[in-house]
Image (cartoon, rainbow, N blue to C red; front, side, top):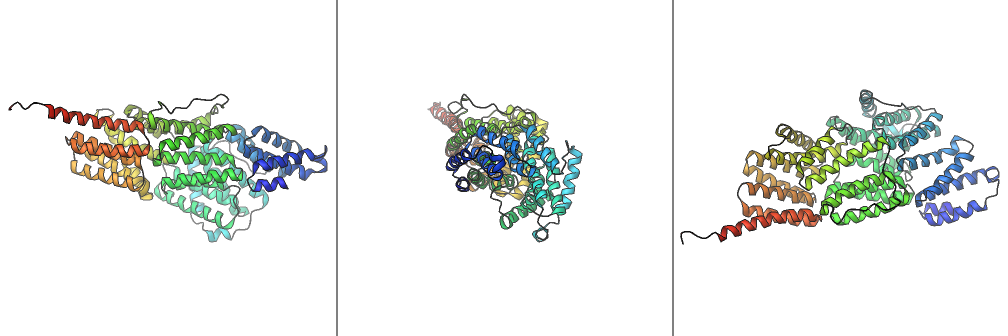
Length: 549
């Protein structure tokens, strides 16, 4: 009891001590003479060890439960933790098969594969099923029986795994959860299924705006009922992480970062370290996009990487390392901030599905790195590669299109990829304009800046100046110092191309202030060089002797 009480206070060190003593005091035949106490003690030991980062101890306790527990019902909690740990170690096939085996024993079969055509039909079926749902209708449903709740719980867990390893299964898994709800009754995992459907509707790039709006409505309904009707503290970290894939399209990106940090704290406190670290990933990802202070972000990332190493969590670590590389490149091109791999660190994913998902993230970050460092051909290459990825996330696509669109004007001026670059602007502008309707905070400055570059390229000087100014103001209001600096820098180049060197200097100086606030030494140095060139030009003009004198 003392160990469980300490667990409830998130005091895992004390809980571990009490549970160790508890296990030592059990008699030799405890699984026969004290079955329930033994089961509870070993399960608590596994959870506490997992929360503390002692994966070997957790695995040993889980194996004891699998070996000694006498029914599937008594093993369910152990399997749930076991699958989470497998997933955190990027052992996707094993975690999938374990989930499918448990669901099969519960009477639920899962298809091995869902084709793209089948997935599209499932999405349309889901839209029809959820379109008329409301809180009033859902509260009238009976409470789901224990077996149905367990099925929905593992469908939810399998959905979390499938996002990384088999994304084509997501529509099926979430639709099946809602079907079970309508047939057998409501539980908190029913509402997690609604959130899952909202993620699908908001992040598939081919779906129309009406489906995205339905996704917001259904996701909001699921979250509202979870908060008001259920105690979901045990899964709050994972549900909040999932819902972030909906809110990232509407809420300010800074708010998304703050919410992810809160999700990390909730996960650590509740012992759900797998989703605590996925929330940590979200916090860093959103912070990069919001233009957070880069040196501070580097320190935070290194803190998470240290903890991830202790927990043997290669899933979140693989992504965190990608984020760290981007931060390092944006600060100083990695000259003084690159990371040395330490002895004993586990290798990243080696299962193909995890590598494929990470490849999309890597391409996205290569777009960011190459754009900001001025590698225009490389930016074009990785942008095109990302846009060709069949399962690329809609949020990644939008941000990449912004940089791809801006980069296309640089290439057009160089006479490269002219036909494709002309298309890129139209695609980027149309999609970002649509995104702006859902979040002016995140996208308005981007639309203005794309328009400014178009006007500048076409020779409409006045219109370009106005759009550059609007982009600067919108970025400043949204607290995006990096994109405010970018608008100033591109406006400076526009003035320079048109012979207004004095105004170009002023814009470069404003850009330098913004980049310094961002913490990007490499960008500060770049615009400082531009200022020096203008100063040198001015001094050269002054030094030319007056021939008439």
